[in-house]
Image 1 (cartoon, rainbow, N blue to C red):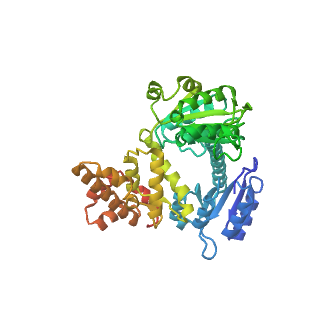
Image 2 (image 1 turned 180 degrees about the vertical axis):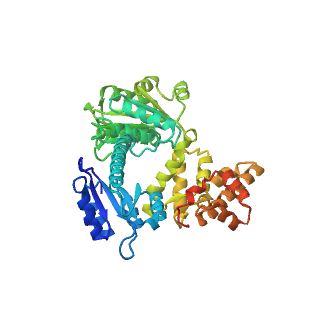
Image 3 (image 1 turned 90 degrees about the horizontal axis):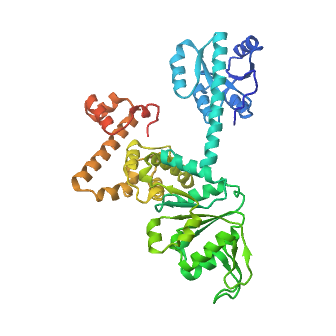
Length: 464
């Protein structure tokens, strides 16, 4: 359900089982707002599903076992939900304050002062309008990012490069370590280009021996060589009107590189064993994880081919150099992997987050994705915690350290695990957590600080 402002006159939904109160309020406000009433939570949610509501006045106390807090949470699960203002009696103000912690915009004590109510509704409309603008901006950003997770300044700069070059027809050359996401960048360049409706074809030049890569790229005619019992179209031809991603282009044979250069410059090519000169309109995007200077100096990569491909260079930094991407990527991979395994994982524990931030991730994004997938497989609850990563990156990196350093790291991991458990079971109450731990409160507070954990983050979380 998407809330769309209905015009200059606010359209407000009142969810309250007191029919007389609803009627009186409708009469009192009939010239200033368009008020609709629902007398139970289910009816209110059904009305919201139809759209067109700008704000909700929601009574905390609903008939039967219904709770206004439960209805509030249901409303907030909806996309771009209307702003919710709680209605409460004087003696239930504390509960209304709790509702604001859960996302209510404000509360009014019944019977409400009409001028104050109108002021709150006006501010609620402004809140919805602001959230709509932010949502629109977010959609714009997502249209650029696609599946790319970018929070670190280096990654945000990379997105700006992609946005700059994608609409052109320039050749793009991507460098970066293995597993850093070069094909994802190439795909994003294609998706934001004028060729987005055409194909995106990828060729790993290191995956084919010298005798087969030409046939793979340019195709072959029937009888071109032993075993060629039929015509086969090559990837260059299949990429017509789209983008051809040449991964590890420096690993291809030199003789092949000469033919590739001609095809890129002219669009002309011949199938292996064929005489006909064919043509394809292809935008090449190339990549390598090797050092370019070494490739050129050793003669493994032709200079003329490199300079033809390297019209617009993009360098993809390794994950260890963009640490602010680590946790957003981890959460992204959880959201992708967990549903396919039938699991509902709602968070990564603070101790596990700290461990993820500290890893060197020499295998870059690919290694992180694999570590998350292993942890999700092991997880039986709703929280990914350190033990779920125990035989993954943390153990491997610890074994490479000197004994005392590895021991200190293991003890810190245990401390984080322990503190996290105590805070979770005490809902973030430091005093109660310290008492359960059998340590003085100041000592427990120091433990929390040493672990880099925010106790406030556990205050509204249910026990795990």
